[in-house]
Amino acid sequence: QVQLVESGGALVQPGGSLRLSCAASGSRADYYAIGWFRQAPGKEREGVSCIRSSGGTTYYKDSMKGRFTISRDNGKNTVYLQMNSLTPEDTAVYYCASRTSYACSDNEMDFDYWGRGTQVTVSS
Image (cartoon, rainbow, N blue to C red; front, side, top):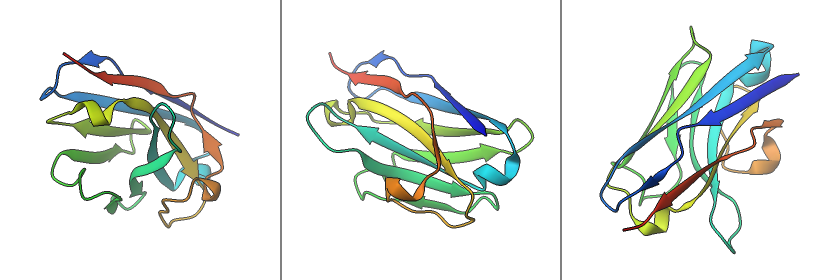
C-alpha cells in the first residue's frame, strides 16, 4: 500500500510561481514512476508530467514545457512540481499518482495509487 500526500497548492496571481510536493510512503516498489495530473473545473483530468525513479522526466503539454519542472528526492520519497509563469488556465486540482512500472504514462488508468489532490488557483 502506498500513501501519497500532495501539498503546496494555493491562490496565486498570474505570472506567479508555486512548488507542489508529493510525499510518498509505503513500499518504494510501488512508486517507481510518479506522475502529476490536473483537473480543471468541467474538464477531464490530464497528465502534466512524470518522473521515473532514475530521474528521467516527461512533460505532456507543450504549454508546460519551460514553465513546469518536475524533480524527485528519493531520500525524502518526495516528488516536486515547480510551476512558474502561472496563468488562469493552470487553475485546477493537481494530483500525484504512482505506478509500479518504471515507465511513465499520461494515461491515468496506468497508475495504481493516487493522492487526494491540492488546489491551485491562479487569479488576480
